[in-house]
Length: 242
Image (cartoon, rainbow, N blue to C red; front, side, top):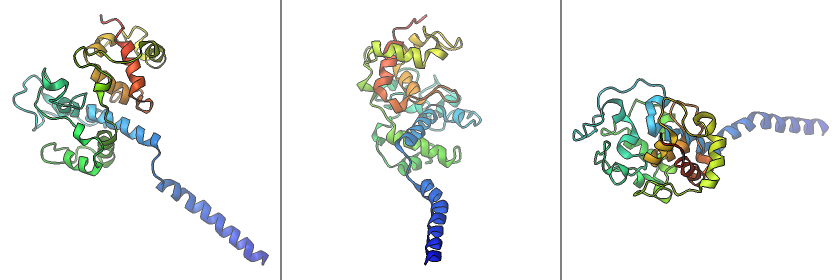
């Protein structure tokens, strides 16, 4: 009897050792893990070829409208160039200006099935089949499906003013951002002052603070939510512009 019990215990222990890791590997991703994929998808939306360290595309994207002669080359291959930082395309900030294309945004795909989104990325119009791997398409589709922000809740379109709490944003900026950008927002020297950047294009600012800067060590704050990011941006708009 003792021998049978020992064999049973040994069998259970063996199953725990070998099946345990498999169970862990097959478990669904946690919310935190999904947020990291969404953040990466946001950088791919910004500049996918820099994120995956691919060669810059040459010429204009085939779907780039001939009516827009102000932008050309690899910038026309960036998702944000057609669909906008605010994700609204021709119905948002890109209704006019140098990025005016007449192309719609991606807001209608908020909550959409990622397989459907990936199929559209690979269709003849977008033509991204073979340019990224499965993980890249998955992260980008996840951003489109689950990472979108209604920026009108945080940014006034007419004034471009960010609706955040400046008093909360100051310590957040000085803690999270100042190490790279300086407390006055004047760093690094090869970019425009932070106060000018965020005041001129707060939608771009919200996107980059939420999801990070492609190919750089800038942290993504998406896990903290757009409310906290709005506080940071509201304070950033008070920084020197020159």
